[in-house]
Length: 355
Image (spheres, rainbow, N blue to C red):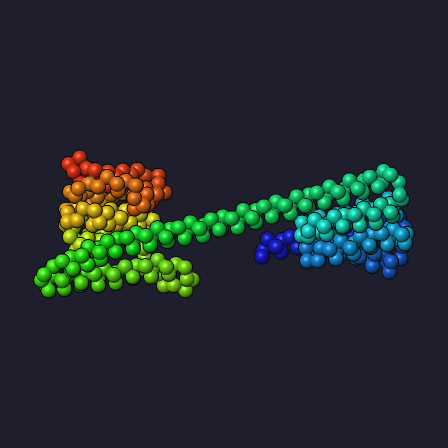
């Protein structure tokens, strides 16, 4: 608002300067009465002050007034400099604010009108044509540059939206894959056990896991609604719950978190999802097994290591889960490795720099 007001003040100042110059030229060279000088000066100069509001009207009025005061011999042709300046101000605004067709039509009208009252001499026509054409080119170039910046801004906004949707899709993949893996394992256990107590326990785990999955999915999908009351993103503080849920699915998880867990939200979320996806792979491909989760937080980085003593399935290297983990680490310029452990099983190691 302040910047816009500043531009209007500049226009008013320019109109005052042009008005003084035009009025002085009328009185100095022609010695005309005030009732001719004042209206002629206002019609020439005042449109400059409102050119940003009514650009086409300002151009038409100031051009017609310039031609009229010269034809009426109120202003001599040798004093056309100030009126032409007013016309150029208005022409520039038309070139910036209106389409190329409108601005070119304005340029042609200005050249014909001003050249016609400037004496018709070739040098005068060339000067008018050169001045007004230069102003039009500058204005049209400004219009093209603004259009380019507007498109670029729109593309950046669209890309940001696309990236956010991809992030949500990745989060949903992690949530669904992890929890459905736990549910699948427990459902299989419930189908094969003979004891009602064990079946009841499996169904209880399925109920709790599905409820947790729905809660987290609602939180993720809530970002698509402006009126959503979103819960904080999961972080290192939620690792214990992940370990407990994996344990219920038959994976004995040993969790070891070292250092200060107060890390940036994005890094904490990425570490959480990496552990979640790694535990999902253990549940799907190695259960029943033992698994060690080590999270070491230092001032420089967050190091995540998940190792199990399962069969060490080699095809995990091409899974979408590992690709997602690599992408999360790559966002922060960290390092990632995944593959069979030295003593069997499977091992995932990720390091997320904090600086």
